[in-house]
Image (tube, rainbow, N blue to C red; front, side, top):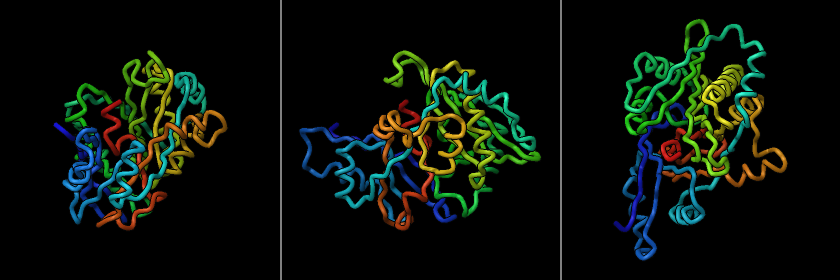
Length: 289
């Protein structure tokens, strides 16, 4: 084998329309086979006139190569971290949750059917309107595929409802000790995804605080996530997450924040970086951690 290029299949909602998409992952060409256009040919294998191609968490070498192929970017996501989520979750537990919101928790492991959760996920996705940022669709089809390939990962869902109607959810997963190098042997929690219908600020804040409570119950020393969504950033910051905007530690987070790029052809021709919502769920990072 002299090269490898993985494509993660998904569907995106762009300007309210559904489009086939592929996230390019694990792109590599052996050094002694460089200069033969293998990298270009592997990426072009996934190109279709009606398909969006994008990538997130890209090396400097890949950035330079993708630019030569006409991709735009790189643009930075925000890596945000909450230290000691157990303490933060306990502190927020004293605050009154929005009285008209109800919450339900679910734990789903790899290879496990979604069951009744599928209805909630589809309903939430169907209620996202043109006011939502362009995003990867996150209904039961997407989550069923993810669970079929995620191995022994277990996801903790918290669904927010109002008057019985599902309005959003947050997903948290405990990483095995040592998977995040800066934490050594300590365990961390990753917020894989955060979704609220039309990015409702109240729902997002309630869900981020629920995520802290889940991370605390999982006995982790830190919770972290990435996002490109300003509404997410505000909700996370209001819940005690440290952001790249802060002095000192913010520089460290900026250096570690994944960047993203896309090929501006077909349905992606009119995409704008500030109009796209990306999280760990949008690439293969979730499977690698």
